Image (cartoon, rainbow, N blue to C red; front, side, top):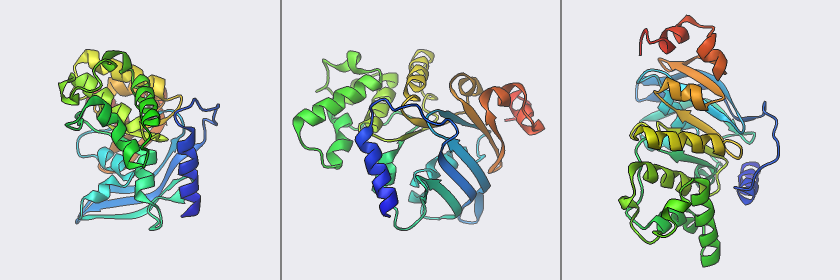
Length: 275
């Protein structure tokens, strides 16, 4: 669809230059009546959720509540599971991402994903970051070099690896590998970064570095993070959605969710009565 294609391509030309001030009430995603089934099992139930632009939105809830499923629905990676059925809509740039004319390559380039466990390619550090731009057709060495350095700098990793770019990424520590995966995601110049438990496999020191990175990146990117760690959600997010049994129980400013939730189920979860 021309509107969608033009919007994401124009956005890619701008990234990762610091963006002007944005309307904090502007939505980057708007889910309406979203339902999702794995076969006969319903994982998401009538989700209505607006995700704001240029900030960090945390999704919390117990295991099996649908939070990772929802995250992977935002760039349609969930459809890699063949038994998935979806109804409802998610608007992005004013276009329903489930419209059959939406280009999935463009969508997934604009809405990147960082997974729970670091998953660097068995390639050099340089080639990991350059992989996405090469797929997009960038071949000029100078342009690739610039993109790699900029992405590694933005991921807070450049000073640690600048003299090791030709070495295998598998030789990095776990925390460095996760920041490399974030750099690899940024190299294709997305607008949104989805993070699925990005620090659950990391030690406290590496977790702190990733959290500091997320706080820095939210000026230029819209970040949606799934986390089991409620302290982490409280530290880094601007808004928080509490999922339970495939439904959104409550969605509000993070301070409100953790200090004065309106639903008793939210209070019970964040105080440890279940989950």
